[in-house]
Image (tube, rainbow, N blue to C red; front, side, top):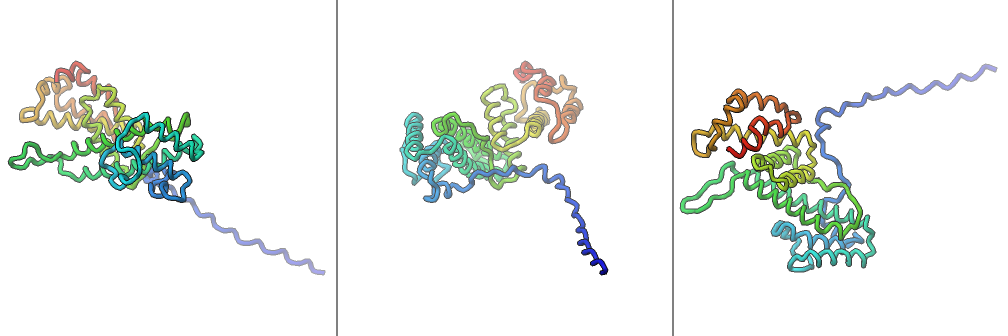
Length: 300
């Protein structure tokens, strides 16, 4: 008998070449598994809703007036830290919530609230750069930078407030840093960060000021190199602006002498070039050294 023809092999499918992610993938936001909708955490479908509600109400004291929709939550009318911590411990115990679950619920609640106040802070970016003083008014509205800094100080005050409650809620459990997971672009977050650190650039000898800048960097998930570049450019931009105005109003005494010590405007431009691109550049210490260190700053 004639042997049966072998079954023809199926044609090989052409393997599609994987597309390269491209430069944009380097700047995509980290995807968080944490909840971003506070209503879901407070809904009856969440077994830990009473714990989340107690925590949420206590956290509103960290940013007065920023959470008008949460003012209806039951809770104390004033914040007393010891009472607040006791309330969290008791609520957690009555619901039999583990430290691990309490820690994640804490992070989820803070995550949702951070989105609200950071988004609100970003609205200050739309303000005009300089404040306008109306006739007859003692003070004008705040300019853009001042308004952004004030709004971000509210965010940082909220984070400090939340930290005072974490141990009571989570015991010794550690969690990943809560970072902004809202819809604002990285460019807007970096713009706000730059405004904040720029406002403190010439006063950054205060460790507390630096600590708050570092906290903001963590909340906005800005890499160290990127943060250093932003800080340097803002600092130098402010110095350049003051130098150009040294003969007019707003100039700083001793600015001309400081410029001579740096080699004049040409030396200043070289220093700016040495700071490189967005993620490059020398350190703040190098910039300070070029300005004569702390003594040079004091003379300013």
